[in-house]
Image (tube, rainbow, N blue to C red; front, side, top):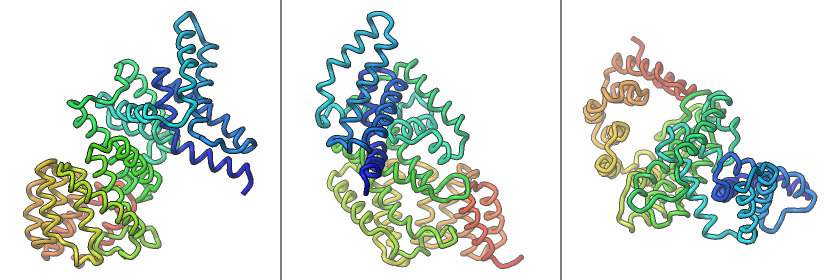
Length: 414
């Protein structure tokens, strides 16, 4: 491999891994997300020109942060109007030595601060997701727009407005205190989970899975788990994502059609991800502080334990869903529990359980898809057909629609 190709590969790897770290450090000193992001982008542009020629530096992340800081100083001096700008540039220069060395705890704290800033409750859910992927994941606005099937201009406006909101509302650049941490952390974890869910089952378009979003969500979950080792829920989220993502290789057939969990070839599941997820779940159990993500991870661990679909311990899954409903009462959790009840007790029991959430989830295609399958199992084919038709009207993903069409076609004619 040539030095040029080595440099290009290294830049791509460092960009994905370190973009958020560099932005977080610059933001602490500049107090402006746009200026911080611009400085880091300029540093990577310099790396594109130099690294293929000079070679990759011993500490690529440190090189990027130092170069970005110098670029920021140069720009501030060029734009300096009065003493305030000069003083800010002088402060950055005085801090140069502390940023030239290896990573420090302060830099890790900066990344955590940036995560909580991007996921602040004052921002709308869509803005939190877009800002997190842009500043922490380093994804371009075009990449994020493609992933969420929105126009690039719309996504750019979303990111820009979120930055303005942070500035105007003076959202603090800090990690919440002990009293506020649980609620704020829940918002952060929800953003990462939403990113993964959109990647694993896209809400629209032709593709069922958007692997890039799954990978980014897992990367962010690893980052959170590492930055907050004293909190079990980030570890629980990481385990949950790993245990679900392990099944991705068996989820589509050769034509790209969706394969339901009971019908998957389990020899294709990623055993390394399953082992890692199981190990995290066991560590969480020792902690004895169960939360929603830990309980969901435990449910997925039971699924992944079964080498055959018929070996699944549905009774244990129902018990775990009972616990989950106590800590996170939600109609979607109740829907999933009804599926488990149908497998553990029978389809009639599952249908009865579904009645408790039919009104709340009337516009949710999965409710109708699940109910259709259970109705078909008890011989109520006409009602099942109606439910499949409703699910098809509500479903936005082409691959899932095709799956529902195939299931409906299995019903007896008439």
